[in-house]
Length: 307
Image 1 (spheres, rainbow, N blue to C red):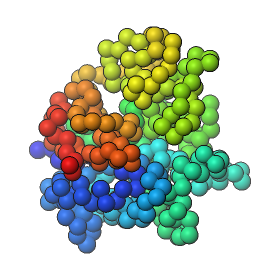
Image 2: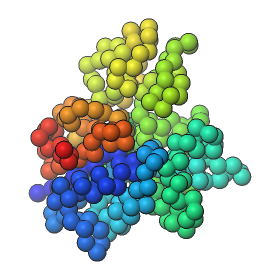
Image 3: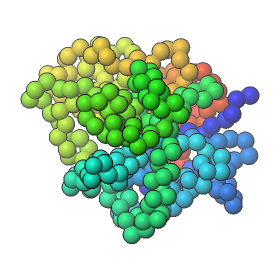
Image 4: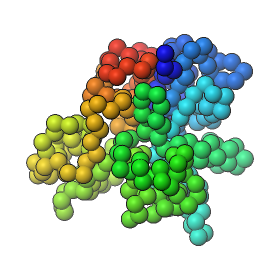
């Protein structure tokens, strides 16, 4: 029988919600961290940022790092861990992620808790560095935002263990490189540029001239059918055809689990073999898990959360 996994979506500093969910799933705290007698957690990344008024990042990372380090959990990198590494990594004397007001504000919750603890901050950033960008396990795949085989293959040539070394972090932080596009797609989703003059405001109030898409929707006929966030107004661009280069996830592929997309409502599969576990805990929603036992067709009854 394959290993049973409890796959948990984006947490964004909400340690109390994680503890409640782990207890709900039957995990108990031990000297080596939360563990279960027969199951493991898979974390989908985005452990940090958001929740600027919370003071739970240290506790959250204490839980996650102990579980991963002691074999009770696996984890992949989210875009916020990637951003943190770029924010705190210098290249030619400058941080890879510019410390603009916008970037600093997005990262402020982490800075609030770690800037006065440099040794602990280094330990956490070292943990982020060893997170793989994706996992291929028996019977399933895991990636933060988008399984795009072309980009997985490109990065696998550079990083056989799916982990970023310094040179790959630099390349992936340099707009215009193949590595930049690949990492952006896997960790932030597939993006389509909008026609000139069309823009929208994202959830943080930033103006966007490109829209992310629901790459799992196989039957969509126009850009408006797949644009994200759901309900976004992209004007006349909604009638454009679906770009040919949107990644396709084969109907006969093993189940793929993602986070990232700030969904709402009652959790359920996106398709028979794709499930998102991000249900906006940082926006007043739920911290959600999927209890995976090797099934080829995902089931709504396997989603779990604390009511």
